[in-house]
Image (cartoon, chains in turn brown, red):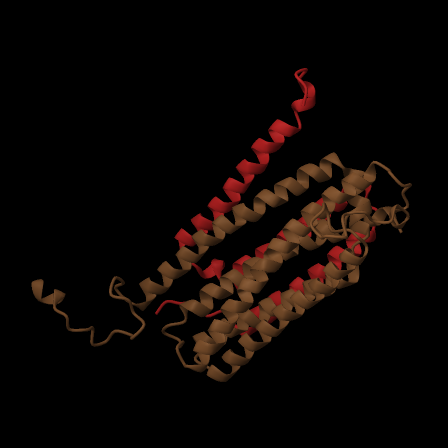
Length: 241
Length: 99
């Protein structure tokens, strides 16, 4: 058995196979499992914010509905569609990597990146609207402290609901902000995938990076699937304004 | 290699299901359901959409049992976090020691 420790490389091994794995299948499954364990920590991380949302919404039902009705439902819905489409193109990128079709693989990754940046662009437009309406909570922005026009919410000046609306926007910016940060990181990861795809680094035998970053991208999509109805669609049936 | 490759047909179907789910959730938000069911309906649609993403886009349906256990553990710990926190917050008013 001592001979097997000799420095001769595996003759049949894939160049991407690390020495501590038996074969490519074991390596791939270990990578997928590791990514899922990371995603569990991500689920718990976002879960804490969803918990805060639930508690404060329960505490301030009226203010949350007023604040939510102020969000742009069209931009939110379009962004949901953009993100779902990007998840689809990401899934197709994995498919084309698995089947060894390089050109469509690269195109799908590029499309996913463009759609991700589109999402961030629309998000930036929304954030700017909140800025001009002075809805950025607290005193973060110099010269634009939280202080929306109460009449935009059908409230009198100094109404107690304004503090509740501010709490909604704390949670709105914390959750969509963390989500957007994940999108920015995802865009960076996609850039890496595009570069190394062009270098023909991935093939049907070895495509864990594409698969694992795909898992990350879909996870970020799922977070938005929950954020959209919870933040944008609150109490719309009450016919606010 | 025992890797399962999900077909393009399945991916397109899931994509369409997700789009329909998004349209459905926007429509349902404007309907005044009785008993305050709006939130429950919105969450039911979101959970359904997420389940499709996890099972097909994220390949969990074709993954090893170990991956199933890891995904299940995330839901389990989320359940603990929500249940225990609510058990505290929603019973505080019953105590006379203040909130």
